[in-house]
Length: 175
Image 1 (spheres, rainbow, N blue to C red):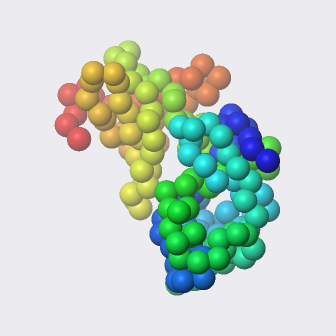
Image 2: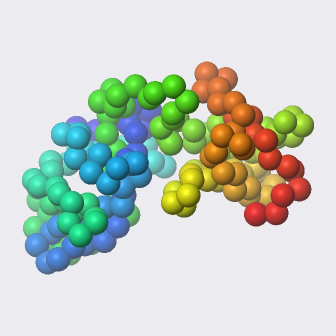
């Protein structure tokens, strides 16, 4: 069964094959490494394709500080390699509601970013996990890419309904 992008939240990406029996190593985009294990239905695809295909997970577990998984029909290293780069998404309806002042990354992507001087920085293209804090990747058409830390000091307002994010970040800051 396939689902549309609007119904899905990307939770990770297949990084590389793991071993020779069709297992894959997964780069998770969740706060906790094992959070993806909480969801019974995994869909594989690419965000830009806007089409997700459900894949049966035979087994998944934490191994040496990594998440590894085995999908039905993925029985050797070549089949696992063919999945490399596929994103893993779960149905949005399966996610718990975000706590106050917490956001799913997928809800931030696409927001229009303005600073306190009402200068339009562009649109959130993605986020980076740096360890210390998450960082917004903001890009405007023809403009510079800006990296803005997603911290209480830099983020002043997130208005998901209006599709807008207000930041305390100078226009001339070189990343």
